[in-house]
Length: 85
Image (cartoon, rainbow, N blue to C red; front, side, top):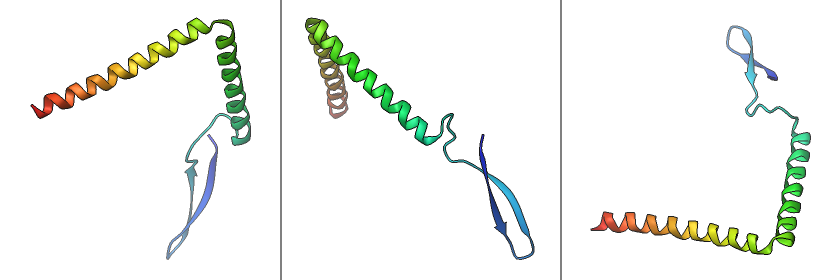
């Protein structure tokens, strides 16, 4: 864990303390951004490949996701309707 040193000055003395980084990371920010971009590119390529090789499967997946969202919204609406009754 990388720490930065800050200086706290009081009336009588100067005290040094170590303040931890706000967001510790395994990779430096630049490398993390490169890895994130690479993962995004791979995911986009996978989606395009999936759509081109199996359009029926892709349509079924989208339909299932849509049905899941509709069911979730229906359950939320039912919950609030039961609160009103």
